[in-house]
Length: 266
Image 1 (spheres, rainbow, N blue to C red):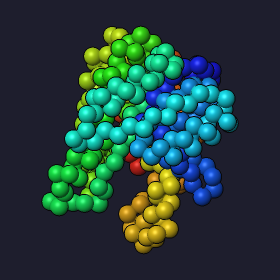
Image 2: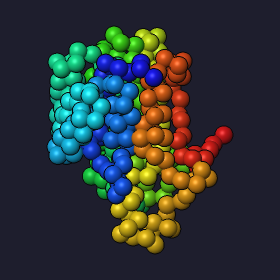
Image 3: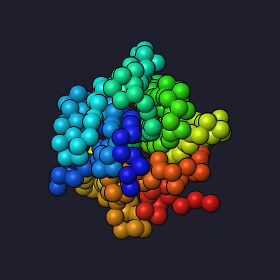
Image 4: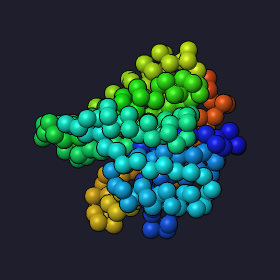
């Protein structure tokens, strides 16, 4: 496509993760790979230094781009604005501008019912997801305004459909959807478009869950009508590439379900 060559994308939760067959094993790394193949320079964040270092080594070696890994974690009790501003400052110091922000990172205590959820578990989801998206969007805004860039935020069918055992995760993801729609209205005049993806994809986490708990996997993980789970690079990452393209600039504030037919709604 070529439009991303030399541009800068920030991807939260972009550390290296692979499946048993060696292909991309997390949504963040799938997005990073898709963007790297298009020639974008990347800033990837995460909590695990080794995964970030591994991603930098592989992406730079295979795709002749530059990758800036920054360890960063938005969490309760931390100086989160400073943590995020440091990522932005390092990005500008190295690359000079920001064209795309992708808020992918999220942690949660999945499987815990609302009645059993603790404040700490609720905070985990809200800080790593909703607050992180808020801080990154706020800090990136002046730079995205300069480049007339794009924001791609990640939500979930768990929020759309109220999945059992996902109260904090669903709350965080629906908060991100609301935040995204407001940004679409407020930042549209600045040339920034902001959209949401709700994905269903095959990840290393699901692969490990299937191996460790085959009966629980069978009972809880449903196959979408498409007959397969999404490929994190080819079916999620490539969609993120498209959403940052000039062809999709008029799309703004939308929720796109990439769930192989499971995310249908009126």
